[in-house]
Each structure stands twice: as C-alpha cells, then as structure tokens.
Image (cartoon, rainbow, N blue to C red; front, side, top):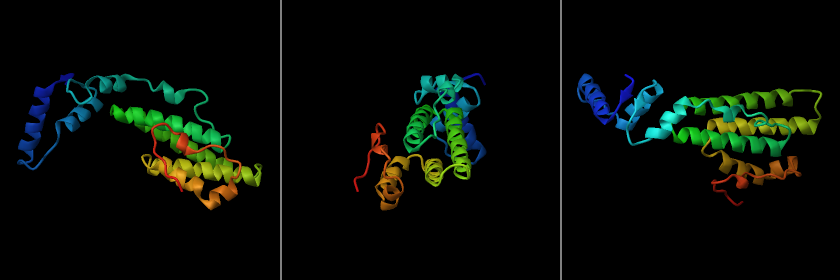
Length: 182
C-alpha cells in the first residue's frame, strides 16, 4: 500500500476487529503510525506532514561533527542536552529511526565514557568524572523524560558537590525543563 487515508484506516481497523472477534481495539493513530513505519504515505490528521518528513530525513543533526563531547562534565551535559532535544523532536513526529539513532548515540557515549574511566593513564579525578558522565548517559537511557530532574537532584547531593566542586553547569539550563530546588 503506497497511500492510505481515513477510509483505509477505518477498513484496517474493522478488519482487525473482525479477525479478533471484536476483541482487538486499535486506535487509528496507532494504525497510521504502523503504516508510516512501513513506508506508506498516510493522510490522517494526527501527524500528517511532519511524520512523512521524518520518515525521509537523513538525521544529519546526529552526525554533526562535535555534537558529542565528553571532555568534562560541562561538555558532556551540553552534548546530552543537544541529543535530548533532537530525540524529543524525533519522538514528537513519531520518527522511530531518529529516536533509535539518538538512543544508540547515547549508548555509545556511555560505553566510551566507561572505557575512558577504566584508562589507567588518566588521573583519579578524570576517571571519576568519566564514571559520572557514564552514569548520566545510563540514567538518560533508562528514563529520558525524568533525566534532567534526576540530574538536578544528583547535582544538589553532598556526594556530587564533594566530588565535583568546580562543576559550573547545571541541568536547570535545559530549555523547557522544570527543575527542583533542594
């Protein structure tokens, strides 16, 4: 199927119900998303144009040189904020490829930070910082929607402040995110 509109979506919904003896309930937007992910152009008012554009984008934003920096806590936070913003844009338009690529980049970054933390040639402070960066990326992968709130609480902890007294950043600078004051 190359194109599908509201009529086709209703027909698919009815067929799913018929095959499941009226036990199957799928909303039209879900059916539209499945068809889009299979390459069908769907004309349905939920995400009509952005989803079509998302399915054809090349995700160059994630391949941008210099996007990923793990030099220190500040640069890692900036990188994660940028990747998170892209992830949310992709998710907003149901771009599964984009969200998957963003998650893969974060997972690779976590592994890279872990590898650096294990490098005996780095000083103790730098290795501790790399372990902290790896932890951030791990938590983001587990709960991206809560990550920046978690990070605010993490940064407010005595342990964090003792380990990283010179850290200048803060997730409160993440646009559109609420923060907790502790």
